Image (cartoon, rainbow, N blue to C red):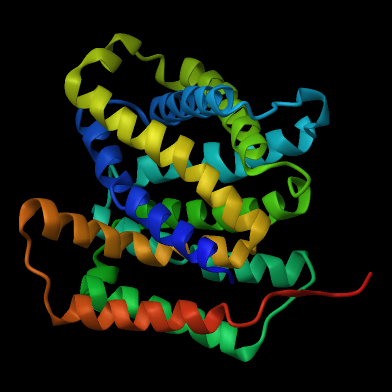
Length: 296
């Protein structure tokens, strides 16, 4: 993997480190899960459109495979975003971030079963080691897992399974698009899908967008966490691999802790440093060899 891909991985983890917090803030303001999907997609879409116009990147609407784009947008954005938002009404953000870190494992399993991918022992070992690092970093133990709300737990796991499918589908169907086109098209599809579900299920008062706390969270979650973030994410999928891109979820809890240390002067203990070492080592080992496709 090139240095630019690792740089994108680091930057994306820093951006997504605050996403669970932004979602929690919106939920505390009684913004419904589908409304969160619609608004974060919409803010992200505005961001990518402005960026493409300023940078003079071509949209090339006719070259976009819209049926595939809609499928990817539903599986990789709309469904998991709604499930994550709902799960955070029932489980803690820290537990949600741990379950979110199962995404790379699901991505590998989906690639193995449905997309003919072959993985070496070192890749499986690296992914497993990184996940152990997450458990140590956040101090998760069997007692804390057993006490978790089963509905919230299940919704979060289903969201990560969607991410596993969606990431593989992105590589398969959107490889001919630039990272800007892929981000624009999928966010457009997610905005449309989220808007339809919002109108049917939530029926919100969208004037809440202008409340300072909500607006700030939507800018963080939409502009940064959806617009800028998915440019980086699609770059890692298209130039790297779905498995490498999904490994960003290992670093999201680390980034959240780093932000807490820098902004809130929170303490960083031995478990954080130990977990970080295991995560870094695991991700490095897992990406020493690229995924190989079966012939035919």
